[in-house]
Amino acid sequence: MATPSQNAVPLMEKEVETPFDIVEPLALTCPVVFASPHSGHDYPASFVSASQLDPVALRRSEDAFVDELYEQAPHFGAPLIRAHFPRAYADPNREPWELDPAMFSEDLPSWVNTTSPRVHAGLGTIAKVVTDGAEIYADKIPFAEAQSRIEHCYKPYHEALQGLLDRTFEKFGTYLLIDCHSMPSIGGPMDRDPGNNRVDMVLGDANGIACNQRVTNLAHQVLRDMGYRAVLNTPYAGGFTTRNYGKPLENRHALQIEVNRTLYMDEISITRSAGFSKLVGDLTELVKALCAIDPSLLIR
Image 1 (cartoon, rainbow, N blue to C red):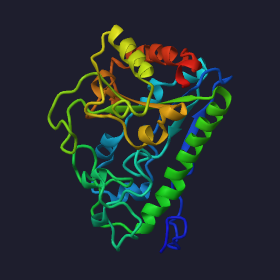
Image 2 (image 1 turned 180 degrees about the horizontal axis):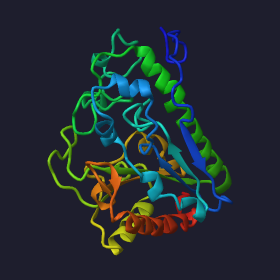
Image 3 (image 1 turned 120 degrees about the vertical axis):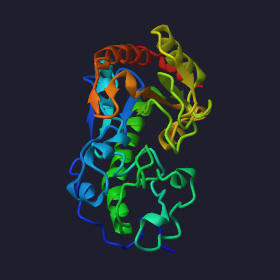
């Protein structure tokens, strides 16, 4: 039986030249790594032309400008990895092979995960829809297209992230991954809270199994002290990244942070709003607090 590494279907031409970058600190002084997996906006021309949506509609799945919200992290001794490819093109916060068979022009290999809740919602590794439920593609796409995106974008991103975490763990005996996201101000049709107005921030630690509770509580308290309405794990408890890299029993921690987009941007035009600068300042204070954590508090 063929596996993802053995499959002989040829890959399509690489279209995203640089799938990510890493902003390094002058010195690695804390056990924290920041990641922005959904703020990428390098849209290949062939992807845009294959879509039945206009470019702005495609961007509504994007966590626009989130990498900029956390850009001060390296000044506090932590690296920041930023995906360049857009979430609608390939989603690094999914398993590598969560695919909807209805999207493809041929049968998928048996090892592909076709039944996950994310696939059912149209938001697999290669998304079928954007966050408002609009379908992306006018026609079915070849499986080789999914392979190409996963091999050229998804896998290099996770290899680099794993490298940052391994380096941090080797130096400190622990790590804390902060997975940085933004959320629509109103729950979408595929969400757990459709039509509901949302709070300012959601902290996701997989309901307590991906991160030391002291870290979650610290982040929660810092945000509340600044006046933000922050809740835990509802409607987002953390995606693949949080659950895959967060293993507190092994001194490996991951916390997902979702920021309400109305705090810093216009959701229709995908432009920064007047609140952008204030949010950058406030999240910088959160970054500072997280980077100041004593590594010994993260070690069992």
